[in-house]
Amino acid sequence: MKKGIEGNQLLICLYVDDLIVTGSDLNEIEAFKSQLMSEFEMSDLGNLTYFLGMEFTEVAEGLVMHQMKYASDILKRFNMMNCNPSSSLAETNLKLVMNQEEELVDPTLFKQIVGH
Image 1 (cartoon, one colour):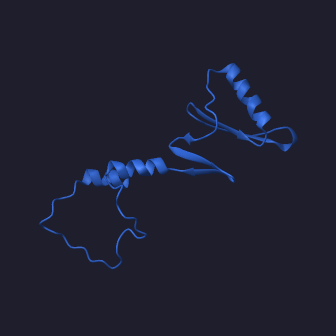
Image 2: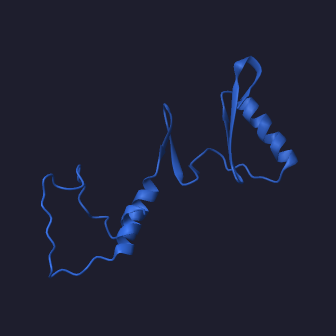
Image 3: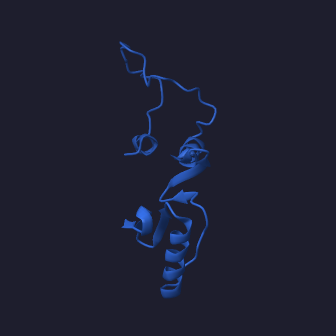
């Protein structure tokens, strides 16, 4: 983070070779990017839309950070696009019993679904 002229701020986020540059003064942002581009080979990809798996959508109040595409990809991968949403993962006070007639669940697939 850098404080500029008249209290303007410049914020730089770097992860390996991905860089976000933002701040309170567009002129300072452009000057900083120009300086970087003169010293390093880089591309300006424009306004932030995607960074490290996070998506960003511009709204009147600023930016909204979300993972809509990631969630959608997970649902598609496990054929769950048409599933009904539930506010609770399981029924409360439900007693589970093993059904000997059903096919066993693949534990590897289950771990992939829940992210372990």
